[in-house]
Amino acid sequence: MISLISLVVVLTLAIYTYRVDRRLKMLTNAVSSKLIIKVLNTLKSRKKLRKRYMVFEVLSSKSVGKGELEQEVRNTFKKIFGDIHLARASISLSYYDENLNIGVIKFTHIYKYKVLASLGVVKSVGDTKVLIIPLRTTGSLRKALKYIKDKEYFIRR
Amino acid sequence: MLNTYVDLNIKPYKNVDLSNLLRIASKLGYVAVAIEGVDIVSNEFNRLKVLPRVTYKYMGKPITTYEGLRGRLIVYEINQPTMIKALTSLRGRCHLIRIAKDALTGIKKKHINTLRSCRIPIELSVKELISNNSINYTYLKNFLKLIPYVERGDIELVVSSYAGDEYELIHPIQLIALLKELGLSELVAIKALTGVPMKILRMVGSGV
Image (cartoon, rainbow over all chains, first blue to last red):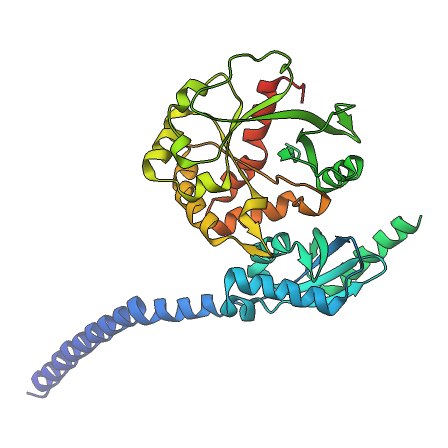
């Protein structure tokens, strides 16, 4: 009698476990198909935005100030790509040597081509005609300044 | 392959120092340029090949005589969209067709089809695209109409600077980036500055 009862209990438990397990599997599948993709997409979009530093040279008929140049580059970028991209690109002029006419512009790495395009479109700063020549893109300001230092040494020699 | 950037349209202003213009072009990384309106003394300047260029206004039929044009880049300029017709008569008679600003502004699909069928590379200039530190909207709007055909390979595109002085030149990398942002693929953008112009220069026979 006892063995029969225990057999029934075991069978019931087994069926219950199987059903629960099946439900759990279904739930996990559902989660994996929808939520995990969502989470992955969010993670992708949250990928770290790295900074880039572009060394450039300015050819101009008169000397150009740092503030004017930065403003002009920002205005051009804004005219072409709009406010949202300007904010995301976070463009700023990290360094500018008015004697050598060499500077470093900082921006977010995904906007490299947009920054290059907008630097090409800048043809005047105020009344002064300018030509901006990109020289090198680096990952740190230190490397960019080192490149300028080497170039300066080369120019002075 | 090394960078072989070519600028097929430089038209210096009257009081511009040509040697300085060519020095800057060489500094920017161009290997060859075609210059119009100036007597060229030497075919090479600081390892930069210099080629004379002649532009004719297309009035419905090609010119009859080609005397004294050997070794020159022959270009027909179209000033109005209505002139984009019977372009097949130009095949073998010119190296390039330049679409001026006014012609591009009123371009329609039938004109694009004519350009497709004539199989001559077309030239567009950056100077007309960029105005006042911005991009000219009307020019851009019609330029974008051509992009799918260029991308598909139906039309061969050459992009030149049309610079009058050294400040109107553009760095080839900046130009590629600009074309890329306008919707061309990187490969086609590079081809518009290297492959197609080099092919034209070989046709001219400048030894580039």
